[in-house]
Length: 391
Image 1 (cartoon, rainbow, N blue to C red):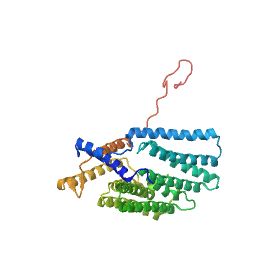
Image 2: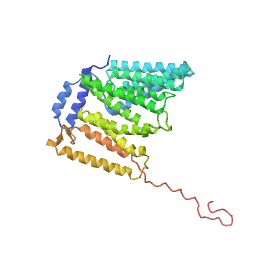
Image 3: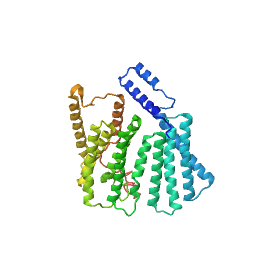
Image 4: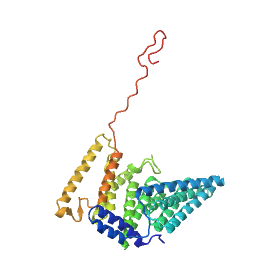
C-alpha cells in the first residue's frame, strides 16, 4: 500500500505545473493562486536547497547511529556486522515510513535519505552475511547484494512513489549478470542488455495500460532510464572499464555488433519519443546519440585530434540552427505540436543548468605542460669557498 494516494500525488505535481505556468505568464497571478488553493493538500514540502540540506544531515545522522551502535555493542566479525547493518537498514526504512505517516512529509529530504540509507545498508548487510555464513564466493555475494538492493529499492518505489528508487531497482537487478564468474564478456553484456530491454518493455506496458497520470509519468521515466542503461551495456567504449571483464579482448563480431547497436538504439528512441510525444524518451535518445558520436572514433580505432571537440560543437550548432529554423517556418511556428519556442519557465532553468554543466566540463587539450621552475640561486658563485653554481 502506498503512503500517498493517487489524488494526493496528482495534486502535488499539478501544483508544480501551476507554479511553472504562472512564472511563464501562461496564467495570471490571481488564476495561479486560485488553482493552487484548489489543489492544496495536507502534505508538507520544502524548497530544493533545504531538501538537500535535510537529506545530507539525515544521512550523516544515520551513518553516525550505525557506527555508534557498532562500537557500543563491541561487534566484531563480518557475520555479526552484516546482521547489525541489515537490522539498521530495516530500522531506517521503518523510520522513513513512520516519519511520512506522522508528519505527512512529501519529498522533504528526511524520508528520502532514510530510504536511500536503507537500500545501501541492506545491500551491504546481505553481502557480508553471504560471504561469511554461507561461505560463498565474492561474485555470489555481490549478486545477492545487488538483488537485495533491487528488492528494497523496488519496494521503496511502491511504498513512497520515489521514481529514482524505481530506477535504482532496475539498475541493481540488471547489473547482477556482471558478477557471474565463468561467463564470457559477450554473454554477460547480452544478459544485462536483455534485463534492461525487459525493463523498457515492462515500463512501456505500464505506461500504456495505466489510467493514472502519475503512474504513467513514472513509467515514462523508468523507460527512459532503462533505455540509457541498455545503451551503456552495449557501448564498449563507455563501459569497458568499470564492469567485470575489463581489459579482456573481445571478438570482432561482438565489437561490430555493438557498434551497429549504438547507432540503432538512439535512432529508435528518437523515433519512438517523437511519434509518442514522450519528451523523456526523446532526451534519452538525444543523449545516447551524442554519446555515439563521441565514441565513434575510438570504436573505429581512429586517433583523436585536438580539433575534434571544435568540430563536434560546430556540428551540434548547425543541427540546432537547422532544426530551429525548420520548426519556426511551420504554421504558427510549430510542426505537428513541436516548437522551438520556450513556452514554460522551467525550460529556461534547464538551459541554464545545461550551460553551467558545459562550463564545468571544459576540456582544455591544448594547454602546454608547465615548465619546471628555475633552480634557486642559479648562476651564483661563492667567492673562494668552492661552492657550486646551484648552492
